[in-house]
Image (tube, rainbow over all chains, first blue to last red; front, side, top):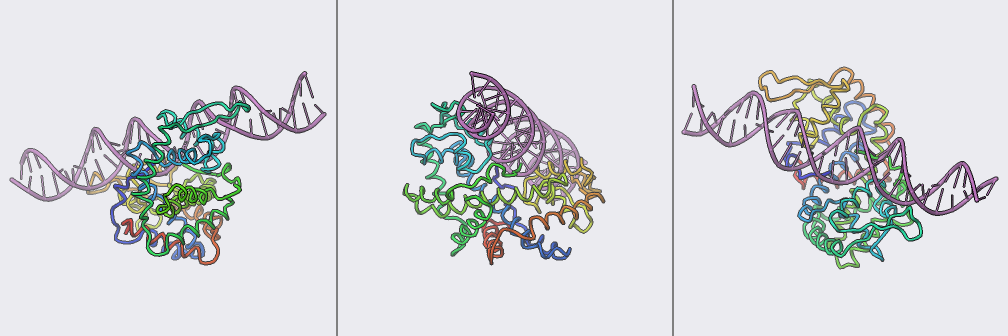
Length: 173
Length: 173
DNA sequence: ATCCATTAGTCGGACGTCCTAGTATATAGC
DNA sequence: GCTATATACTAGGACGTCCGACTAATGGAT
């Protein structure tokens, strides 16, 4: 799940990822060093970002996974979607959707029902409490995390652009 | 743990993250939209990258977490380090180190011993089998993933630079 | 010399993710 | 109409991460 980073906040005397790059080069793996650095950096950046988001959501009893599922429903026209659609929007495994919706339903934020014509399909609808929490949690998240992300200059837009190309290459859209 | 993305490989007719950005703007959260996009992109990019790495490591019975722990030991002068140092190098929680080392030890890739002068401390040493697997797995990882990362032009170096500044802002080093 | 705060590591639990397998329903082929 | 395949979802398990609590050992303060 996720991180407060109480232990990782510790400052190191050097950048451990840069150090890994030096090791790669000195072991004759120089050709792959930059790729390794990119992926390792991505892993760490993800850990940092997730920790901040989860910290902001914790007071609302939400995790980022559940928050995202809630927002997909919040943004939907009818306020309801089949399980499968939620999974494809979030780009996670079906079973992860089952898990997230289970917990949101226990909290009274969404409700399951059976599709009227296709009985295989489960329709998930956001409740009024769910919609209220969606806006409240988003306000907090925007204020505490999204409004002033830790990027200077054009890094923010550049990062989004680079990762967009990555996602496109991976076949996301 | 991690992903083969069998389900998420599915191509969507539009970029779901860009769509989220539009929703943010249309709900009056425009000021926070770019920050949301950056973090959401980071999450998805992490998922994609991790899936590729884990796929390459699976034949060796390794996960990325265990691989990283193994490499920290592989790169150490003596081939051994205290548990705590491993955690600070990898920037993960102590209990994650205990978990990873447990599994590496079960596989005969590392060995625990007690520190000679400080009996609280556990020293972890890489075995010969561990060192062999470290090089083999790295060769595979370099060949299958790190050597041709999915970036065009200068995206690779730019990404590393941007994330380095992010990590620095977060206090990593 | 003794007591107490700090440090190192482990244990158990919560959570998210994936995978495999299984059930129920829908649809296509014959 | 009946059977075979495909689809939608759930169940159970593995794994990594975090947190809180616990044990053991160290070292400083008195």
